[in-house]
Image (cartoon, rainbow, N blue to C red; front, side, top):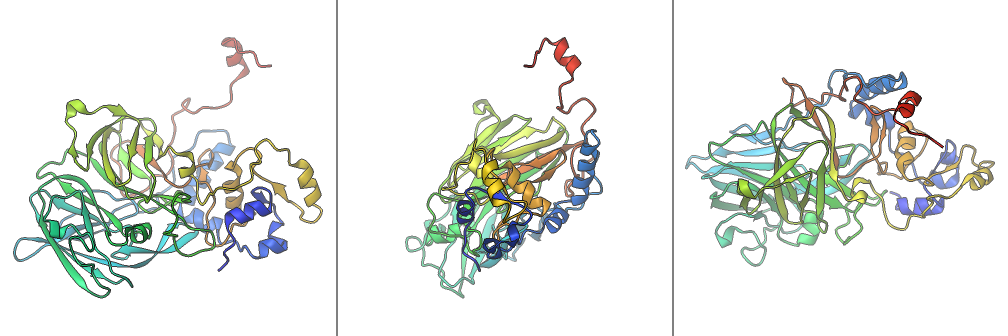
Length: 470
């Protein structure tokens, strides 16, 4: 498998480069295109995208989406149905043992994980997935968790934020012996709290967390169910060089795949809610190094709880962005009172890029026409990119005439109803729809009412408002 990185690729071309015939030159021969635009589009409800774009071409607002194709439901294992929606993930709700204890089983193992269509890596996860399933329990339960180790090395599980006996805390060498490969250990403790917690390996943390051994743990308040939608999202970051097959656990600062529930946009499932639903989103952050300010458009939420417990109502304040520090959870609550498609993303701009890196030549403001004319005789169709940003990169890849390095994805997004969505990584969409709404199906793009979409200014409008263009 090629180890030629995207950074090398960009350097070699003096900028991000494309062109219909670039794939025929020798350098491109070592960079087979693995991004199949049609396959990716199919996986992302291509019919609604095509319909929306057809409408855009006709100068009209986007139409209602065609029949939804993506199943957004959260599968689960256990005796109780899940009460939390984990996009792109699953829940484990426990089975009642003969002694009344709620029993769970985790298997730590190597997992082939798809971060987005076109990018797959060998990670470590639980129960065949990255991240592990969201645990759901109820305050007052007693839980018993069997952990089977199918990894080639020892591991443990730490129950992050819980009050429990020291010997159940899962710190290898301190509170227990690490679980050897092939062995099964058992943890058991009472649940005396409610709220949002996490679990993760606490043995060789740098390696094992970086490879994905993490998950969310939600404890419901007994009898309480005040929310229409209750969502769990784990934030994480990875270093995966294009052309490689494993995340690099040695990386300390230059992460290039930023994820929500281990998926990078456009691989993230949207969040579907009904108009005026009471919504709770539980964020957990087990990124190796970075905090993440998560911002929601069109709404105001209140930070209602941390992993230390619920914040009194009188102490909560409105925000549109919540900072989720490393090793912490933050729970936000709001009313989905605005119909539409709304972006929700990390507000660190490089965290909404895919497989970007340092050392890329700065071509901003450069007139590359002369270079293009010199190159085009040997590479017809060649064009330099990056003079005005990276927004064009993903669009050229999706259109099918720009190759990308093996096992990599475009730096930004996917085609939306009005053009290319220039964000990737730690990004998803909140889709607020009139009730009744099918929470488990992607409804497609929003059908904007007439007169509610920004567009070109009319000369008569400009004259009316005294705007003179020079």
